[in-house]
Length: 252
Image (cartoon, rainbow, N blue to C red; front, side):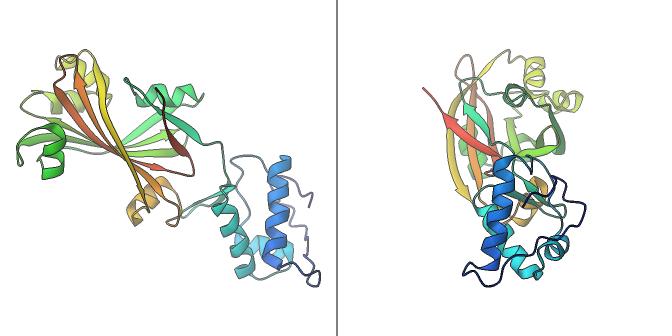
């Protein structure tokens, strides 16, 4: 199939029904070839199922099966409510002593941005308290943020800071959502990653919607502990990363 990348001319490319290869597989092979050849470029939005059905002369169930297989192979990403897109390169998230979101995204020649979903002071549950080394129920500041690389969501993170140790942290984050700057304003000039734990699971409906991904693709879940120069814990954070776009890399 040599359709143009946007495939908007509605030209039909009917598949053959008597050559021993399943119809969905033929569509898969043709779209796979267009992606490999560059006819469909990374980030290109694919036509809708109805449009592809018309172009290939098949029903929507057949098209949907082909798209599902492309998604499983990492060639296509599905964004809830937006459609299917040719997958871009996966971003390596290198876990280092100083891991900063903006630096990570700019390293890939993309523009970082974020949306604050919540910022408030709450009592720490047992998991957060254990991560921060404080008593359960102690007050902590929580910052929840959805992070973007250009216009693509790549992370959903929650950052917890001990109120007693970091007096004024809530007000600092209200003044600037940049964690490094907020910590500096309350006396933490530098901080290092002490520990990172990584697991994987399927996303919740909310996570899938915010990260614009299919619910049958896993997310990477991290738990991080950061300390100041004296080794005092100043942050416990959890992160949720879409595997179609992010992979976590540990290096010596």
